[in-house]
Length: 106
Image (cartoon, rainbow, N blue to C red; front, side):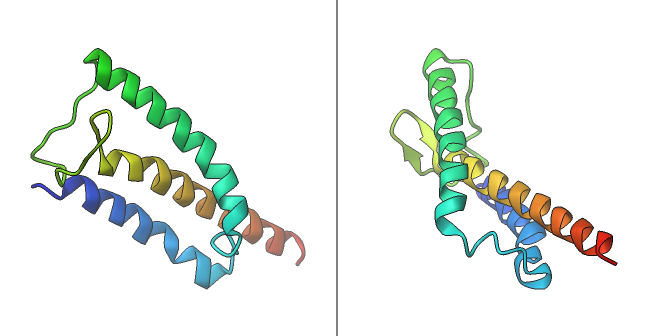
């Protein structure tokens, strides 16, 4: 299915975004801080992927991506992966941290 990769990313977001309003973790309200955290990570891994694609070590199944290819042969979904996964991880980490802090205050 051509949208598989995007659907997996949407599922990751669906699994993590609810933490923001329900637990009030405040991750998405701190846009600058989030960008400063995610951007260097995404840049490093995008660079790594571009090198692997160029060397022929890394490919993407065209049947599972939307077909939007960025410069260097990087599918849009792969760029989104390096943005979505860290955001989901940060949401999960902050939700856990804040929940543990609330419990320890009791």
